[in-house]
Structure formats: C-alpha cells, structure tokens
Image (cartoon, rainbow over all chains, first blue to last red; front, side, top):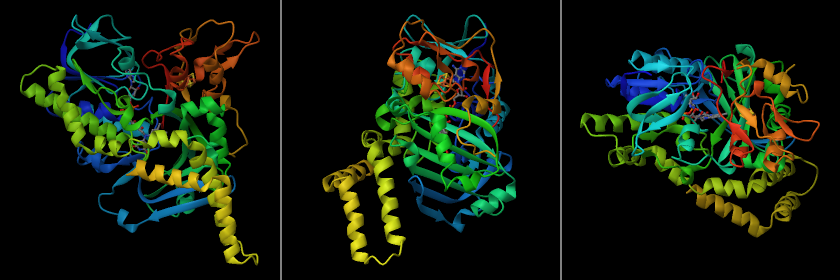
Length: 435
Length: 98
Ligand SMILES: Cc1cc2nc3c(=O)[nH]c(=O)nc-3n(C[C@H](O)[C@H](O)[C@H](O)COP(=O)(O)OP(=O)(O)OC[C@H]3O[C@@H](n4cnc5c(N)ncnc54)[C@H](O)[C@@H]3O)c2cc1C
Ligand code: SF4
C-alpha cells in the first residue's frame, strides 16, 4: 500500500486525464495518475484531428515541441455510392496562419508528449497499472482506488475518472450505465505509410499542409457510420466506424467494411502502394447530450469519453475531453483552496462550469441528432447517396436527352425510392435536430 | 500492395505489437450448450476475430489478438455470456501510432 495520501488520483492518461492531471499539478496539487498502458497513448486510438485552442489553454507554447503532423488547410466531405463520390471541398489559404487552428496528430506519439508535460508539472505518473476498483468508506464516499499492482488502497481526497469510453470502473461501481450498443460506434483504422512527396502530390499539398476527408454513403451498407482519411507527414490514417447495434443487426464485419472502403475507386488511388504498419480498433461515444451520465458525486468526478462528452456530428472528442478535464481540475482547485470537502454539494461546481462551456452547449444543440441518424440510417447512409450519385450522372452525361426530361427523371427517382412525404420528413427531422 | 481483396484479419494483427499475458486471458466465455444471439453476433462483430465456433457448436474466445476495444463487453456482458476485464497493467495490445 502506498502510505501517502494524494490530493487527487486521476485514472487514465488519455486526453481528459492528462488535461486534468496537468492543470492540478501546475497549481501545486499532489496528484497521482494511473494508466494501464505501458506508456500514455499505448492503448489509445484516434483519427486524429487536434484542435489547437483547447490545448493552447493548457500548454500555451505547445507548437514548440508537440509532435504535430500537418496543419489542416482543406476539408473534404464525400458522399459515396459504390462507384462514385459527390464531394464538397473547402480549402483556404487563411488556414496557413502563424498559429494554425487544427492539426493532424498520431495519438500514441502525442499522448507520450502530453504525459511528459504532466510529469514536468510534478504529478506522479504510474503506468502499467490497471485500476480495478474504487475504494469507498462506510458512507459510500469514494476515498481512493485499488489496482492490480499492490494490495490495499491508494487514497486521495478526490478521484477523477478519465478512463475513456469503456468506463469499466464507473459502471462497476454503479456510478453510470455501461454504454448501450446503439450509443457507441466501433471504429477500425489502419496506418498506411508512403513517402512524404507521394502524399503531398496525391493530396495536393505543400510543406506541412494537411487534408481531411470524411465520407458517408454505401460504404457503411445502410448502417449509421462514417469513413475517414487523414493525411499525416509520412502516413495516412484511414478508417471507418459504425454503431455497435448496427454491426449486431446486420452481421457486417468491421474489417469487411474497411476493406470495401479501401477498394472504393475514389479511395484506392490515395493509398496505392502503401505499407500498412498498424491495425487498430476503438469505441466512440455517440449518444450525445441525452447519454451524459451523472458527472460528479461523493469524492469523484467523471470527464471525457467516460462521461460520453463527444460531439459526433462535428467529429470532436479529444477537445471536449481536454476541456472537461481542465474544468474539473479548476473546480477541484477552487474547492480545495476554500479548504472544503469533495462532497457532491461542492463538486456540483464542475457541472456548473461545464454547462457554461462550449462542451455542453454544443452537445445540447444536437441532442436529437443521434436518435434521428440511428432510426433513419437506411435513408441517410444508403438511399440518398445512391440517389445523389444518380442525379449527378444524369446532370453530367450529355446524351441528347432534353434537360427538362433529365430533371423529371431525377425527381422521379427520388420520389419513387422515398415518397415526397418521406423526403420532406427526413429533411424536416434533420433541420430540427440540427438547430 | 496493400489493397489486396479481403486480407485475413489474422494477418492484419501481425502489424500490431502485443505483450500476451500467457495463461491469463482477460476475457472468458461462460460455458454454454447453445450460444446466445449476442455471443453469436461476436463471430462477426469482433474486429480481431477473437470469437470462433468450435466443433461442438459453442462460441470460444482466443484473446491473444484482442485490441481491447470493448465491443464484446458492450454486447455480451449484460447477459452474463462473458466475463470481461482489461489485461493486467502493461499487458495486451501496444499501439505505436494509435
Ligand atoms: C477512430 C477514432 C477517431 C477519432 N477522431 C477524433 C478526431 O479527429 N478529433 C477528436 O477530437 N476526437 C476524435 N476521436 C475521439 C477522441 O479520441 C476521444 O474523444 C478522446 O480520446 C477521449 O479522451 P479520454 O481521455 O476521455 O479517453 P481516452 O483517450 O480513451 O483515454 C482513456 C485512458 O484511460 C486508460 N484507462 C482506462 N481504464 C483504466 C483503468 N481501469 N486503469 C488505468 N487506466 C485506465 C486508458 O488506457 C486510456 O489511456 C476519435 C476517436 C476514435 C476512436
Ligand atoms: S475487446 Fe474488442 S477486440 Fe477484444 S475480443 Fe472484445 S470485441 Fe474483440
């Protein structure tokens, strides 16, 4: 047993845990951070886009030494059917700025760097240690943790649960539910290595400029899901994720989808000749606002993916994780500076601060989106992409058919597959959930 | 070439680094005569193909290639079909890139 009692124990050294541990250690708190991986990042998987603003609040000069890949100057959204893509591209030289707004990163490498900052700030970081249980006193107050390393407990005034989407500790302790299959997506991903010049030529980039492609359509075979392609310096992150409930329902395999995505005629030329060096899988919380559990209690708070703080519509997660970790740390610091106990009455401060931040405001905005996407996944991910492709072909193919007839044909194909009221209902539902 | 049609998952897993905790599997399937629908769905849903059917028609798990994603936990833990935990600290999959 570690005799020392800590001001705070942070479980997990992902984005949320590192942000929380760093913020508390920077202000002189005695922090212990526990991570089950060999190093911070060895268990973590992400796309990955890093949003500069949220990291800047924690490490203002991160651009000096953080392992960043490319800053993003272009975003592509693709709607795919089996042979085509209809795309929306946005590219702006404004993104070539002194302090770029978004970067691609390689999570395992980034997390190692982030963890080093946590150590430098004075926190004790113990890796290769799985926390197995929360320790509670007779009143149910969380007073520390038990690990697979030592007998007995390690104690602290407060435990910050930053254990990620799977959230085993919190669910075992009955603090929140196990995520349901319709509220989490399973993503699989590969790292494709290619020479730097090849990547730059294929994606139309120079220097450290980067591109992201997000793709929906028939690649997910009618399941709620999305494919993604991120350009790094010398590799391409490529993956696809769909709701676990949809995998269960359809019997599709995750690797099967990934292979189909890679063999799509719009994707293959981007990765041709590459060497794959890793295949990974991870869950993503997709339940949105309505899935957020109780965020604090007697001696504990929960942050990041473990609290389902993930904005699927905008593909944001790590920034919500970092922000919730930082805000939890600030609330804890404030309570401690007043020499008050870590009770629910005091820790409610964390929730109050979080409610005022973009984290909860954004999730609240899209509160109806997850259910809509799930219940009408066939329309959004299968029918429409096929119809749009048909309409585009009809528009572009010059074959002597008068334009007026072409338009009629296009409209007919839409109403035949999905009635007028169906189309209207989908559009209306989407609009309402978006607002 | 990387885009061979349907590369076997087993071969994909060779890209990854693992530290296997020999003799201590972190996921155990409860003994059963006939597998539940949840267990059967894992034959397809596990991204590492850890779940397979044996000759007797039962579902078995070999978790050496497990990527610790938690999908089988989400699907099968509630019904009691499996006992799920993380590997001991330091063991299991080690992502270099993530
Ligand atoms: C494929 C994919 C693509 C994504 N793309 C993006 C993107 O482009 N941009 C973005 O912002 N977000 C993205 N996300 C989401 C983002 O990865 C998460 O929101 C973010 O990592 C959450 O951080 P976290 O700290 O809450 O959890 P995690 O990063 O998952 O960290 C949890 C940590 O806790 C440790 N842990 C868990 N249990 C225990 C235990 N019992 N004992 C000790 N340690 C434990 C784990 O090993 C891990 O290190 C993506 C996610 C995926 C899967
Ligand atoms: S945790 Fe994921 S990879 Fe491991 S056995 Fe379960 S489903 Fe397969």
